[in-house]
Image (cartoon, rainbow, N blue to C red; front, side, top):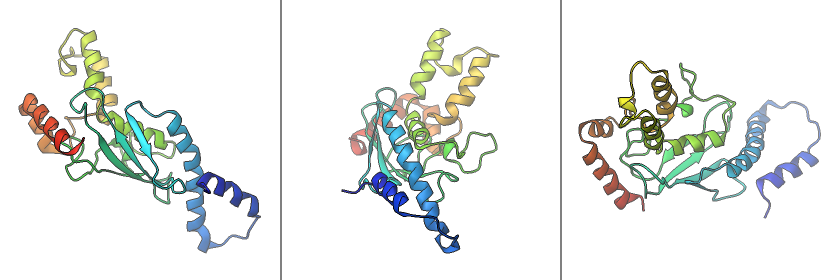
Length: 221
C-alpha cells in the first residue's frame, strides 16, 4: 500500500519546476501541510505519553486521527477517553480541530465534546495560544494534561506540607507559577468551559468524584 510519506517522496521526484498558478494554491497548501505531518507524526509516535494511544484510520490521511487517553491517576483513572483530531488545510498557521467523542464530566470539556485548551486557541492575548511553532506532539500532550493536574499539584503541595495547591503559602512565586503555567493547560476549575461541573466540584468534591466515576462506567469503558 502506498503511504502518504512514500507518495510525497514520489511526487517530489516527478514534479519539476512549474509556473505559478493561483488555482493550485490550495493544493500546494495541502501539500505543505502533509509534508509537515509526515515529520510531526513520526515525532509524535516517538514521544507519545504512556497514557495515550493514536490511531490513523487511513495511513494516507495523516490529517485525521483518533487519540485515546487512559489516565493512570486522579479523578479520571480507569476511563478511556476518545478524541477526534482533524488538521485543516491551513495548518500550521491555524490549530487542529479537536473534539472529545466520549461523554465526560469535566470542567474543561463539555458533555457535547467542546474543549477548552489554551494552545488550541487561534487568538490569545496571553501568549499561550496557537503558534506555528507548535506541533501535533504539543496538542496530544496538552489533551493528556487535561487529566493530570491533580497529580502535579499534589506533588508540589506535599513538598510544602499542605493538602493541595490552594493551601500553598502566600505570597509564593512557585504558587503563581503553578497556577499560570500548569493550570492554564491542565485540569482547570478556575477557568472552566463546563461551569456546572466546576461549580459541582467547588460545592461537593466527593459528589463530583462520584459523578465522574458514574460517567466513566457508563461512557468511558
